[in-house]
Length: 88
Image (cartoon, rainbow, N blue to C red; front, top):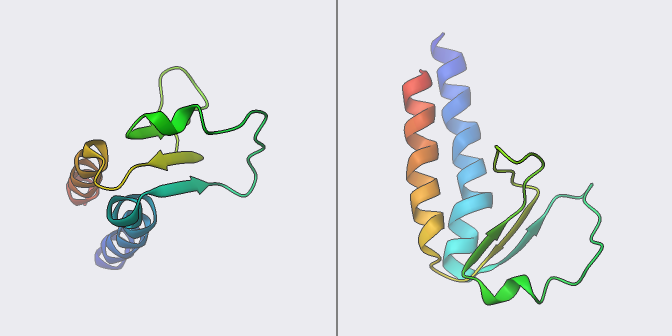
């Protein structure tokens, strides 16, 4: 149980660095390697934060466009770490 919890925390740290910390510090675009763009992204760059989704009821991380210090990134980062801590 302890090893599994430690693994989750380490995995969460690297996920946080990729999805939250780097875009929060510098801004930019994250795109999964298996995604295909059908239209240009410049239309979405006018928003401080844009994220893709596969289903109407979920948020996905396949596509992330973020301005530096986008407020949503701070909220998502804290929420994600709290969820990992609660799941034990």
